[in-house]
Image 1 (cartoon, rainbow, N blue to C red):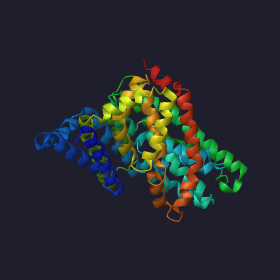
Image 2: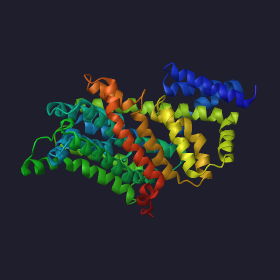
Image 3: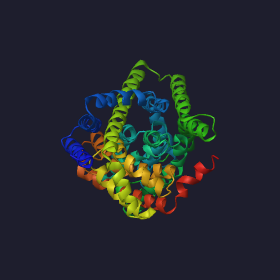
Length: 433
């Protein structure tokens, strides 16, 4: 049996496992380990299986993942997220669709301290949905806005996906964080504009929210200061070269702990829940990384990676046709696997071509994360949609997907702008020197 045929059989086996519902980490690990066993024998296969978790587990950059997850969990469990929403609501809820626009801004701000899309949807959904029900927002608009806005959690730094991509490609995580700021703001502005225009055209979709007095506005703004301060501290420290991303994560956790303690919200229950969720999420991400490295090692030995890269380079695709091809590929993959698995399965293949075409790896990281955002709301998996369904069980799944559709179109417009004008992502990192 040729090496190429073995690689194709391995890929087919992994796809079958995914279709059967096997977790992506286990599917990749089994495929990689069994493939290495067949090609190299039990000794080398066992060595790879044991050494890859050990070698990757010693990577200091991975400390960043549980620290940023813990920071977001502490913000959620201690109730600081509710303060964030109330602070935003008093300023913009009076415009048409104001409550939905508030959810966009609040999701972006909450995502800036969690780095997790699913956590953003779950947290903000629990806070915002009762308000939108109260003011009779159309269920499609309410759930669609929340599910789509949750994706901002992986684009606006700090982002777990950026960390994941940076580790896989050895790209500066600090530069990736900074590169995500402008596209993140642009995406939030696009979502807000979509809501505003739709609610002006059809006022019953999202009527204005309650009017707040100036005293209420200034009082509630105080609740925003800790979140804004943490964002400026973490990202400003990275931008100014004061912290590494790992150090910034530690500083951010300390800041949340101090803020919660000063507000008398740092309870034993909040701490235990935050620690438990952090352990579960971090273990899931690390398992996917290990499985990804195993299957990547197997595919490298078969030569499939090298052959595919040679084929793509031989096609002499330009930058734009190559990226359009990737958009189609990621839309298909996003319907089958989660965002981490999507990157693990594609990055080893596409990065050599990215380098060959002279595409900036920092820019490509932003491109990959925007595609991951689309995957989070693409049927049939659409992780954010499923989380939103648990938050609003009275809304049919089909209605939530329909509600997300206008925001998917908006995301594709942002993606087109990003491809046409790469400086949208690269200008700010370029100012770091």
